[in-house]
Length: 280
Image 1: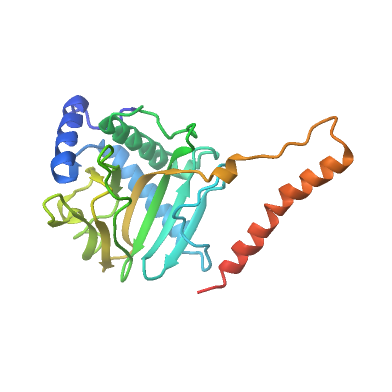
Image 2: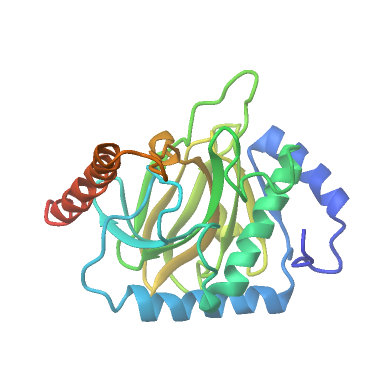
């Protein structure tokens, strides 16, 4: 890990405390984890990016949630439906770094490494596409004031052999300062729902077990709403990892067929994507 964390933090001690708390409670807040200048830069980058690139755009594609294809472009999306109401920017490791989000994305990568260390897996797992198609990517989400929310859900059911799914969030706007009501809630392992946004402070890092029920309650008040970064673990679609090659020595007919197959998998997707943007 890069030294994004405060000099007062003993990483080995924090990892032990986090593992214990996550096992017993399903949540751990790493107090004053980030260096102040790192936190301030992440916050300012996020606020400026959202005001310039998200709030100013009238028409956006749907917010990404799954169906990640290897090599896809970074995407800014918006959704308002029965499941969630948010703006989300997703940045993938295979794309050129966005200079106006450089500190934020680097921080997200390092928080993913912290999660990996706590989970007892390879520190850099997910930074490149793994053999099983596993990746991680940076999400910057805005749950807008006056109605932004995410319904209660589990990211997957806990399994006996692999009971936990550790996530790592950094909130960049804060309840009581940037908005009045709502925020991030999780049901702990004693079946008690906790208002995490009320407990966390600037520079704190939130680690939680994604197999526990959690949600974003409706954000009310304030200028923008709730802003957070979250390095999302997922898998790229298997179809995106398959290519059909045409090389020197192939017959003209074979080259035409391969070219046609490549375009058939591309052009309908563009048409369908554009069509979906007009549907409710």
